[in-house]
Image (tube, rainbow, N blue to C red):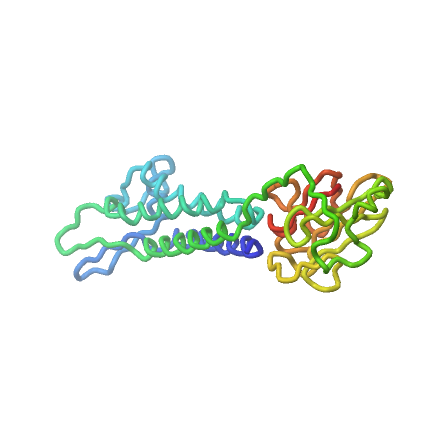
Length: 301
């Protein structure tokens, strides 16, 4: 499900960014008989908290808005700043990063605290007056709660760390899968004398082609994917794309050229970060490659 991780993170980011809208919506409401209702938003409280430093910010209803600066900083300014950072990071970060999700959970926790403690903002109500929560309280909880749910979905769909494969490469005498084309035969004992002439060997360590040793001539390219027009076919492996990647051996430089076309990515040497997509990446012999996830792993011999 790693293909959905980035989508969930983007949606989570959009949700927390909506908290910025709540900055301008009523968070406190005063109802009084025979008078129009009065409302104050977070921006009103923030402006009044800064009035000691910027006198022009002072509100006429200072008795209602007089709240300690520390309270305003923690319950109003801090969650807005964290929402902005989480929103931006969710867009620009990779699908495996977890930083934005942590910020989303933190924002939700602060807004729960704000909703619980909002009554501490209100002065003692006069006769015929009543103070109550404005819609901003509920909206921040809804926006942050939806963001947290999507963040959990992003974490759940992010692939786990691929375990580094063992150094010992299994040796077998015949291929275990019939899907490999004839020109990519397993090296049997009778072929071991020719091994010194083969400069590139793709060895299956785990998955569909576990145990297979596929020789690669100079400039030879192997395509991998679910679709039948690939050289190595992974039928039924949903984590592998139809045309997932290709591998080419460059004998002159003694390196492999790997290009990924997939939505789920490919991972080198147990890294959590997937290899760049649609770019040729040079890989040294001795590298392990996980295709899609840790279920299908190859060793570049």
